[in-house]
Figure (cartoon, each protein chain N blue to C red):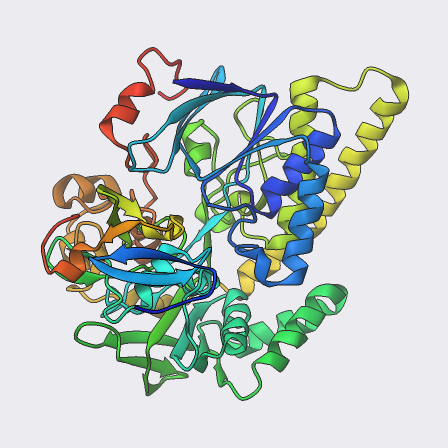
Length: 447
Length: 93
């Protein structure tokens, strides 16, 4: 197996990962960035070629990280804490090359995944996540003239609806489960954040003529071979729409799996569910730092601020403090600036989380015959007799398929209050040959 | 067969399709008539959900390699893609 060595390895090339790579490179570290997607930018800056702002942002960070090495299209499938090591595979599930990455320090910028809640019909073709539909449209899916309902919760709904309208789709309505009062109050609070206020105003302008309803959600989707109609509750009233696509996602869940494999502690579900970090974004595992959505959902500005700080802190962990006085002072000042920026963004994130908290009614969307585990086709009714995810998995195979509970885990956490199971390697299914190549005798921090 | 400028031609279940360079394979498959990419354990048609490599609903066979996530794959010239859903067979479970 190929061995790649570096001083700082960054996992994820979204805003947090790119900022970490830039900061660590500028601080003099030899940096290796690993990303699963075909191109850098992460989900929010996906296919940045299309729009100017994101493209410039990616270019600026890439220029600062010009000396860093980038590996795109590679997936981390296992990790060890002492000594730090990652097992990476190029193109999962393909018979392809694997490599072992050795680093002095690690920055986890693994981002987030959408939270999906099951409802009758949610497995029909044409029902996607909000970010999911957005990703495919950026990937070339033509939605001109298509009727789309956007539903779920969070600021992503308006952003995606606006971009769908711009692409030529007919957005029949946007349904936000949070009450209007809470969202309006958040809007007023944006006076302290002029940038976000401007963004919000631009979105509302782009969505002129599109019904935006609060305290509203999808409760069933109908169609034989694919989605045709969607049944919704709007402030207690039933409304039905004919649609071509339903984009539905209930906020984001921090992608903590890799951190958990490395033994990093997680915050509780009531504290955002992300990897627990200290003021310098160090996780509970030595030399492992985390930045961006993986530490708790905060948005792109928080991710950038955290990436800068985590990159600096990781470089310091790998290289030690600068040798001469002037540079040592500059380093300490940069760290202090980074901490202040991160704290400010975290306050905003905490407010977002309160506003978009999921309402209890959503726990009853899934019926007993609604599939919860899409990999193994396990309905909710089959899970009710069990007390936790592990027991249910052994008896029903729920969460045992290729997605490794990335979809059903967060849903069951919300619906039944089940703690998400700790991930196991490999993090995604890989061919047996690649697994064997990971090699016996790797030191493991897992217990 | 659709034509596109600066495109690449690939085969989807034996049909030649031309798409612009840089097109995501899952985006191409979702835009086709059925939109289905696989058949589930119980025999239901399934299609991409997350679009970003998490849900594995878009796994298809690419150049003979099974279980490739279409959403993490860009269309390449000469690529042969088969979707068990479109063939009506129960596979790829």
